[in-house]
Length: 111
Image (cartoon, rainbow, N blue to C red):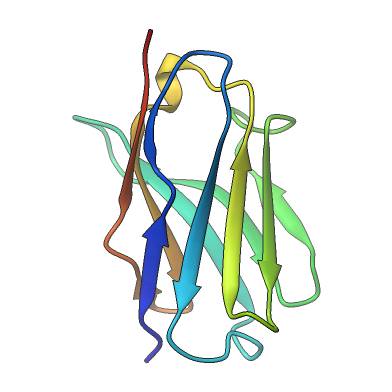
């Protein structure tokens, strides 16, 4: 089972940008779908974006046009570029690969 570790979270002002990274312990080439999820305080975990091994992507309506998911199989990495951040994007962000989850990285959008 692959181990996943997220990084890149932090505090950012509204309108700002962050890039989250997800490092895998082994090759992600064979993992068909990888994704980013988030969980805000008091809310259920929700899908943010998904990407297949062929590069097809899917985004939640709330982030479409602002976030970009990508993966680099050569580096065993997945990324989430987040632009035009809003207060409602504040959450713990998790990466998922197959049935494996990372431990999460916190993103806080606040002035």
